[in-house]
Amino acid sequence: MSAKGPPSYASAVCHARDLIIELQIQDPAEIVIERIAPYKHAPVRYAALEGCDGRMVRTNDTAIITVNSSISRAGQRRFVIAHELGHVLLHPKICQIDEVDSKQTRNFGHNQKPEELEANYFAAELLMPKVFFQKDVSGLEPSWASIRSLATKYQTTLTSTAIQFLHCAKEPLFLIASESGERKWFAFNDHVRGFFLNDSFRVHGYTCANELFDKDITQSRAKVPAGAWFDSFDPNGKECITEDSMRATGSPFVLSLLWVSEDI
Image (cartoon, rainbow, N blue to C red):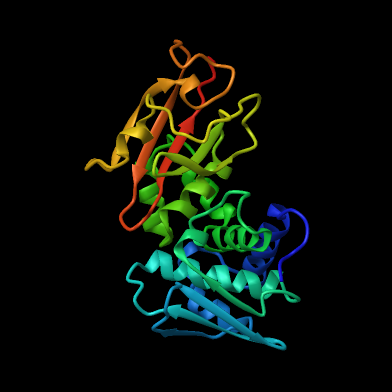
């Protein structure tokens, strides 16, 4: 059974912020998700799971969150727990049994099921509360170098850290995930005005992202023609945006940060 209607970013984020206030958390180091989940009647265990990263099983007012014991990265383990806790708190009448894999936790686009997207946004805000994260983002240039540094501090995944960076940034920013030469999902912040992605889902040859498909390099940053990504611009024109694209280890996606300059 799925939730009805579009996903509610605001509701998911507000639930996470309310929990931070309830727990009187004063520092990111206090966000020990393995303790927060049991506090909300969702104890965490680790076990071998087939075909998924995490599972939540709910009975009445109690849930059990199981994390795949083969996950080696702390950021991914923490996000799986926070994601499943999001279902426990946000979706009491659905998701009595939920399984999540890496493609879901790495997808913040609206092609996700609404409840999965809400759980992702809840997890991002819980692990990286804007009240702390905003201060760390202040003055940082949009880049994967900045995002990696923040992910290390908060012990979070690169994708979720990029999403939180996007929503805290003062500049118009897009985050686009592509796979096998095609755009799979995207997100943007409230500062974006008048920019629309091309109708074609194929990634243009002039982009940094295109350089990373089936090649050994894992990151590329450059000024690229605005028309390579956006509608109403000439792909051969002189209007440029900054693109920083990377392919993370173990991820199927090439992730592209698009920084829209004020002069276009």
